[in-house]
Length: 323
Image (cartoon, rainbow, N blue to C red; front, side, top):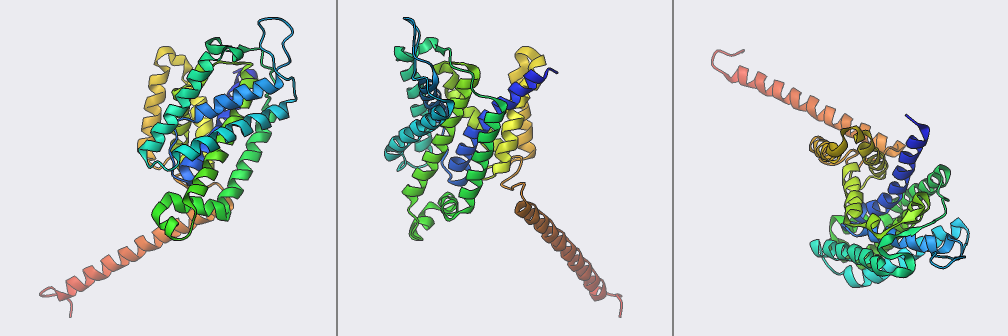
């Protein structure tokens, strides 16, 4: 297999991972399901392109400011975060399915707006985006994103988000500002999605609104659930597996997506809590797993002893039993 092809799959997996990590914080650790994160990716992609594309030299070309790639990443993430703050002010008081529907509508609204904004190419898309995304750039952003999220989850703020996920009313009674932590989770997840959008646009060198449809939002949510809610390690594994799986099944041609869906269903049946089931591939996580296994083994051993003792007592109590 050609290394360039493998490299492309790894880059797409790394880009997806950034958006999935943000959604992991919102859905896995805070308990808010979103089906509109492709909208935040679109905002990041278009704002990032606006920052880095050179100014137009001929009529008909779409020009930008010609700034460095780092400026595009920061601007794309900041723009997505700002829009998420505005969205959160309106929607975060909604409960359950209503918040999901609101985010779904937001994602589709962003796509339709970009479809009709001729300044950015409209439905035809925006060609000529510089190819600044490299394997090393994506890897560095992935590492920073994982480290930041891991430290956030372990902090007091992360524990408060988990408390909101577990029981919102109890968290509120305990003095946790539920709205504030929902807003923080939404903004951080949107910034992650915006950065992923910038990297995606500068890898494809062409962006088009239909790249950020509801299908993309659904794909990100599936990866989070597939990897395991509340598991950063699960998000990493899920992004790698579910990005590579369609490519591995490409030999099946038109049946590729059918086999892809069947594979996801089979894995979710065998692992209903996801690949990691809320566990982490860290020293503390591995110690916790080992302790849980020891506890289960001790419980089974004690149960067997009790069953044996109960059988012995029943034998002694039976007529003609041992004296």
